[in-house]
Image (cartoon, rainbow, N blue to C red; front, side):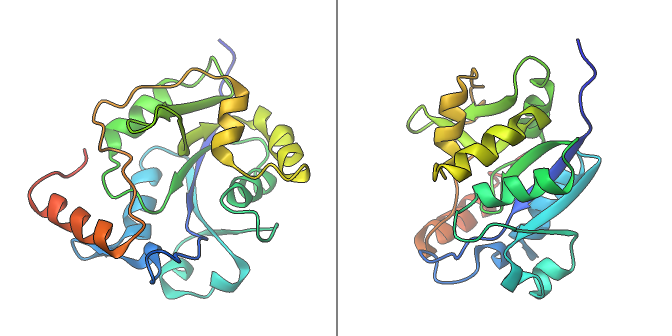
Amino acid sequence: MNRLAPLYGVILAGGASRRMGRDKATLEYRGRSQVANAFDLVSRHCVRAFVSVRPDQADDPARAALPQIVDGIADVGPIAGIAAAQAAFPDAAWLVVACDLPFLGDDAITRLVAARGDHAIAAYRSAHDGLPEPLCAIYEPSTRAAILEAIGHDRRCPRRFVIDSGVPLLEQADPATLDNVNTPQEFASALERLDTGSMPR
């Protein structure tokens, strides 16, 4: 097997959080912000880790406390964070993780890392609709040109990018692992689930 590129990590924390009505990155689970929790998780599996932010978020205290990569392309959604990370360190593979996955833990990341080597992307299948989960995935350096081409042709959806890549998908050991939190109701439910002991490993 060819030698793998070094694995870097990026937490996508550049969203507008419109449905939540407040910044999802700063939501607290057991006394710590979600962006800090996600950063620590990713850091345990990567050579280096960063938080992806929009330019206007760079001075936000929760984000400013962590190493950042600032989006270079405006108004294209989360794929901008992936592209910015690849532009900053083009020879690295990137573990991309959204900042709103409170049930994600070490076990799921370890399985992703173990799946590297045979394909340009390692990603899970959604337990809800069977489609790829592109925001908890590893993108090898070979995907960079295709991602830039997709953006240039106004194909902004990371999920569609993974679908078009045709890579096989991993099955989740726990169907709740990649449940995200987008609304106040989902946040309240996540807090209740975590308080009852459903913590990720």
